[in-house]
Every structure is written in C-alpha cells, then in structure tokens.
Image 1 (tube, helix red, strand yellow):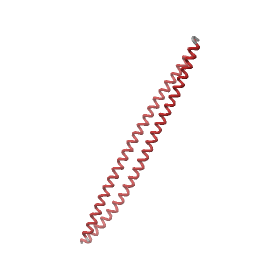
Image 2 (cartoon, rainbow, N blue to C red):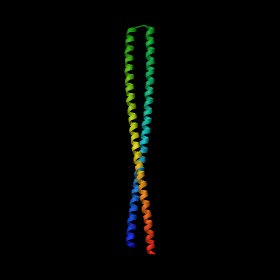
Image 3 (cartoon, rainbow, N blue to C red):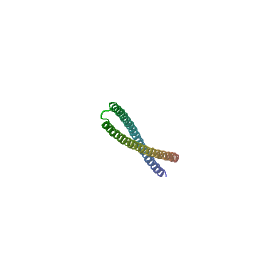
Length: 169
C-alpha cells in the first residue's frame, strides 16, 4: 500500500509539474499579448501624431490658399484702378477663381479622404487592442484556474504525505 501511495504521490507530483509548466506557458503568452498591445498602442499614438502633423500641413496649405485669395483680390482692385485691358483681366480673374475653387474642392476631398482613412486606421487599432485585452483577460482566467488546480493538488499531496508518514510510523 505504501508503494501504491508513493506511485500516487509521484503521479500527483508529475501532474503538479505539468500544471506548473502550463501555468508558465500561459504567463508567457499573457506577457507576449501585453507586449503586443503595448506595441499597438505605440503605433496608434504614432498614427495620431502623424495625423496631427498632416492636419498642421493642411492648415498651412489653407493659410497659403487664403494668402493667394487675398493676393488675387488685390490684383482685381489694381485692375479696376488701372482700368487698362479691363476685359482681359476680368476674364483672367474669372479663370483664376474657377481654378482656385476647383483646387479648394480637390483639397477638401483629399482632406476628407485622409481624415476618413486615419479614423478607419484608428478604429481598426482600437478594435485590435480590445481583442488583445479580451485575450489577456482569458489568459488571466486560465492562469487563475491553473493556480486553483495546483492548490488542490498541493493539498492532496500534503494529505497523501501525512498519510504516508502515519503509515510509516
């Protein structure tokens, strides 16, 4: 009977070792997921910084466009004052305004598409982060379950060990 208990004790010890290994693997997986989430958060911050930089560039371009508008109107005033070649300048001014309006429209479409792309990337990164948070939570739950199982096995080992000591006495 003592040999049988020793065999049971050895089997329980092997099971504890296996559970310890599984716990270690789960902890490593959780740490890897945590690192991946941190990397993705850093990428998200970089994307947001890039988006902010793009917005600043676009705002600078809009300011330059405002300056171009102001210069255009100054030119129109000069044309009115000089009243030389009035018809040619008016036609040219109309063409320039149409070009500027076309450029305004193109810039607005471009800015909107870039903003939508950035928002889409941001949403995708947030979804990915949420997915990793769920995975980390699941791994944490598995770790907790393994720790509970290990505590039960330790208790069983202590009981078997005490019984073995009593029988040896």
